[in-house]
Amino acid sequence: MQHNIQAIAQDLVLIGGGHSHAIVLKMFGMKPLTGVRLTLMTPTSDTPYSGMLPGHIAGFYSRDQCHINLPKLADFAQAQLYLDQAVDLDLINHKIICANRPAVDFDLLSIDIGSTPATISVSGAAEYAIAAKPVEKLLENWYQLLENVAQNPQQPITIVIVGGGAGGVELALSMQAHLHRILQQTQQPLQNLAVHIFQRQSDLMPHRHPSVQYQVQQVLISRGVKLHLGETVCQIGPSPHREASFAVKCESGFQVECQKVFWVTQASAPQWIKTTGLATDDQGFILVKDTLQSLTHPEVFAAGDIATMKNHPRPKAGVFAVRQGKPLFENLRRMLTGQPLQAYRPQQQYLSLIGTGDGRAIATKGCLTLPPHQLLWQWKDRIDRRFMRDWGQIN
Image 1 (cartoon, rainbow, N blue to C red):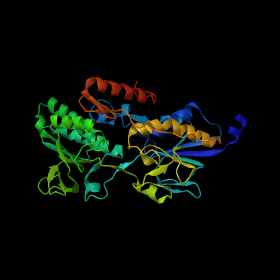
Image 2: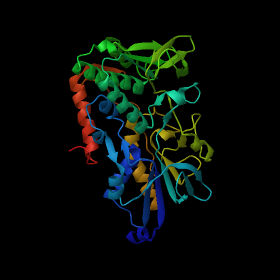
Image 3: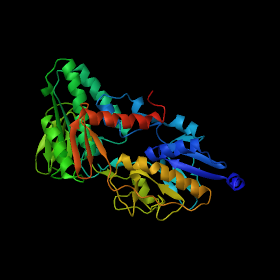
Image 4: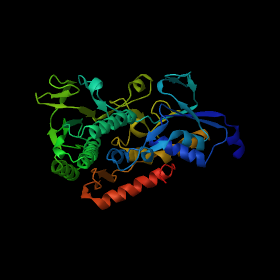
């Protein structure tokens, strides 16, 4: 058996440094496969861990503590690292078309490039709003905002968040908590900061159980976050009244002026995926079987937000990407060694710990929701730190 494995000379290429691929790389580092050339292609040298990102924005973790160092991980897995972006696939000739380098050949391919918020249809959104992804861009804008507020704390500031899903809610609470701390330290009134959430549906977090919707809404109201439910943002443009400000307009005619607009709407797939010939769902995400293989191209696998499991559709949430890491590794390994693949079935219900930005968290699973508490945050913090410790990011 060992002799067969050594005879293999195959190229396995991983596009994207998402949660699933980070786990795959770690497992290949622990169980190397002779005769397989492993390559990671990603545009950035570190990848954010979504579980700790709101905590980083709230000021609880440093940037390093919530990012996985990909060169270090690629090194551990003895993988080649190409810091570049895939822009297309030639599936007939098994080539990846890259933004800046010559095409890369593959025998087996896995895609874990996450998703981006859908901004295209709203006038001015692509130009004036800050999308939640790519995270690097979001953080750049956030650090700049922190600096501006620290330098001019007496200046009133209004922040608008478009999207009232879990991501939008956590972002609003984390940003507010951090900026409130700066205002308190500089002895400025907390009223200097206004945070607005616009949500097209009449409920926050519409795909979640009413028990968690209620708890989240209570927290936001008690913290003075202004909620605009059932309001569809249709235009963003420069404010006619104030320099360096924007006007956010809704279909109803309602509008708010602000200094920053953060866009955290429903996830969408990068455009280039749709032109590759891979089977996709209505939103353009890659459709995969229970084995995490493409429905149309068995040599292509996909995981994380970019993938939709045909038989088990689930929300686009980091918890699923993390859980897919091990089964993805197993099936890639089986494919490379000519063994039958195994079906993976994601769990129906999952525990969600939603940080409220103030050292507390809400816990929810199925129809059960626990209100914000420090112990729940400590529990979440422990889970997240343990996950990151594997990558040597937190001492």
